[in-house]
Amino acid sequence: MDLYEAIYKRRTVRDFKDKSVPNETLKRIIDAGLKHPLMIT
Image: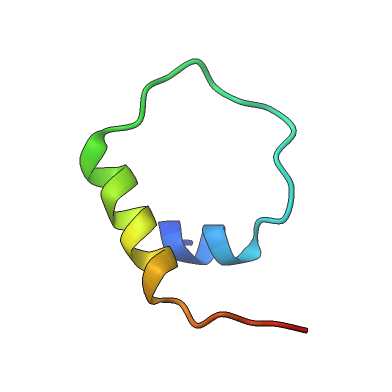
């Protein structure tokens, strides 16, 4: 499973790690979110 598949399948967060996330990773995640179509139900 790649990062984007994990993002789309994940619904809740119950635990956080005490580990920093590289800026490039955050940038890619935000960019993917901005390109994803808005789904209003």
